[in-house]
Length: 119
Image (cartoon, rainbow, N blue to C red; front, side):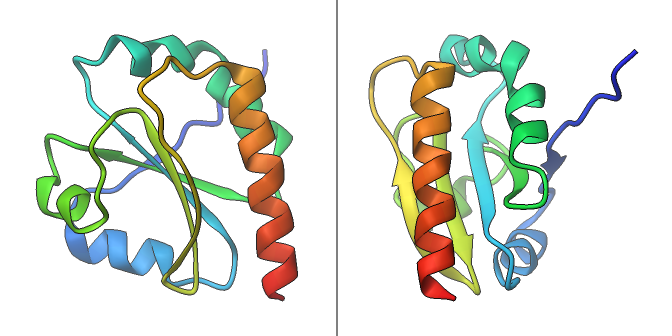
């Protein structure tokens, strides 16, 4: 049986700030429990996380639990993917359309390239 790789859930604003400050790029996935498009990505996200292990760290923010964080980072649609490194936003993937695994992986490949270019 494969070990499940789930995203660490951010519980509060301080934890969020700490998570995005590192030298390693962090993908923040903004979701909620009631969002059908958020549930659509759940079945394949563990595999995606495994694919990028060692390159990207993944954390989850529930938009309903931390509305101030979402407002500060202009998160309007969900799920939204925003990559941070050293507290700075590198890239984001936000659209009104349902996100496919292929689109998410293309975005993450770009995130890895941008993070590498930053040094």
